[in-house]
Image (spheres, rainbow, N blue to C red):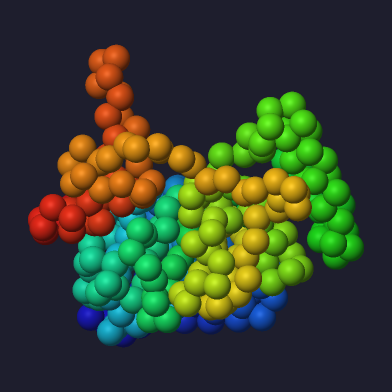
Length: 278
């Protein structure tokens, strides 16, 4: 393979993104602007995560790509095919063998290690957008540590419904400072971000923003002292394929019946002793 075309983007572009990543790692939870490039996929379909992966990937890396926990979805297969075609790196579905995991909306069920880099595809990087549309005011609020509007939103939900209605993109405070949007992962994955040994990188191509959570960094959901943070509960439900319980499930409706399957397909196949085929 021609070294000049390794990982699709030119070296200056990758260098600029790596500089933004370094700043993001130095300021956990802070959104750093970057010059998002045109990619051969539409913005809003993962160009932010794709640019980060292409900027950091090395020939010896092992790549895993998932979408909603699935290795075989259209988005995951297309992303995996493109990255491997422009880098020649090995791609796998096994979390344990991978070094870079590009993901949309899930963290793998298997515990990550210091050898993993988790790259999130992010559609909406600004956590204050839902309560403050003015971008200049958003910056002032971050600078002042003023998240009162988010607290009011949580209070209104709690007083009316007993708990927050936010099911994904739940606001989290990183290292006791910046409050950030953890991307559209479910509440179930929020506690798994806390003190993770893996480096977590977030890229929003359309919004031209990068942010990061370094390894072993405190990540806490916003919550009131007298209210427990609750993740999704599936009761006594077990996966219909592998029998697993206590994991995050996809609900599938067939006719009027509900069926539940593990969201993480590699985890589910592993429980069945099957080799995943994407």
